[in-house]
Length: 218
Image 1: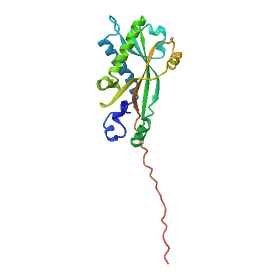
Image 2: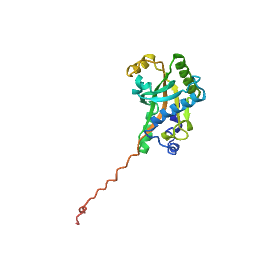
Image 3: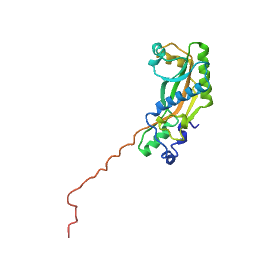
Image 4: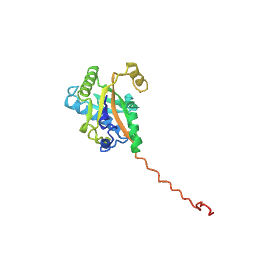
């Protein structure tokens, strides 16, 4: 099954060389793209009438109630809690790296999206609108991706609900400075991080001095 960056598949190395190279900013760019897309969807069709709802990338520290109180509710937090290499594409991109001398790391980004509002009804509406938006457009490409990621025109990021148990989600909240809240696990794939081109070593020149052996005359 093809996934996000499969349109620049390493098997077609000639066409891949014509597209851009993703740098370390690609992970941040995927998060910002999701944040921007959801915020635009909330503005187009507000989940809570009479209120402005936005999406916001958050850190672990932001789950502290003192910090959450500084953010205007209602809003949807987008929390990256895990990064893993993509097991399907890792070998293929490693093969490309052996040809072009540049490392390529395809990664999957695991997000938790959580609604924050002043009442349960509003929180459920925010979650429902977020699910609707991501189900309507599960693939972000072109202008839906922020330019900082240096994505090629034919690159895409696929965002789908991840099959994660409630117990696993609750374990994530065990490490956060807040109590458990209903959250949705999503996976964004594939964000590729390309390394810098390797600097080739200079050729080794060996100088040999001396007298070449000759056959003695008879």
